[in-house]
Length: 187
Image (tube, rainbow, N blue to C red):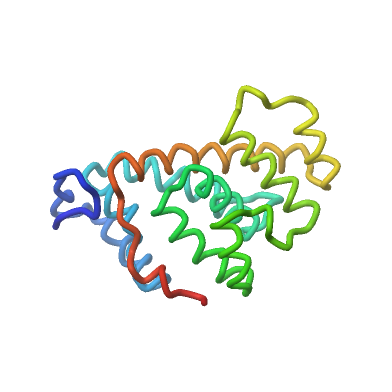
C-alpha cells in the first residue's frame, strides 16, 4: 500500500495483529483509518509511540474536555498552517461542539470565535507557545489561572500544544494528506 505522504515508504506488511485490530477499531468507530496512522505504519514502533502519546493527551484523564483539547489542536495548527491537522481536527471541533462556525473560526482565526474566558485564555496560551515559546512567563500561566484552570490543566494545555507543534511540523515535512472524508464532516 502507498502511504498518504510524499515519501516513498511502504506500509509494514503484513500488519502486526495488534495494529490490524487497532485499524479495524478506527474503521468501526470513525468510518476510516486516519491517514496519520497509515503514514506512521511504515514503522510499527513509531506508530505505537505516536498513538500512545496521542491517546494519552487527547483521550486520557484530564480536566480539559475533549472539545477543549481539539480546540487547542486547531489553534496551534492554524498558526503552523498544517493542512492535515486543520482538516482533521477542524472536523472534530465541528462534531464535538455541534457548531460548524466554531470549527471554521478556529481554522481561520480563533480570535474572532465566540469563546468563553477559559477557552480564550487556553488558546492565547497555546498560540503564544507556538509563536514564541521563549517569551512565556508567569503572567501567561496566571492568565490561565484567572480563566479558571488548575495547575494540572495548565500542564495539559502546554502538553497538547507541544504535541501539535511537533505533529504539525512532521505532517508538513512529509506532505501528509488528510482523509478526504474530513472535508465534509459535521457541516
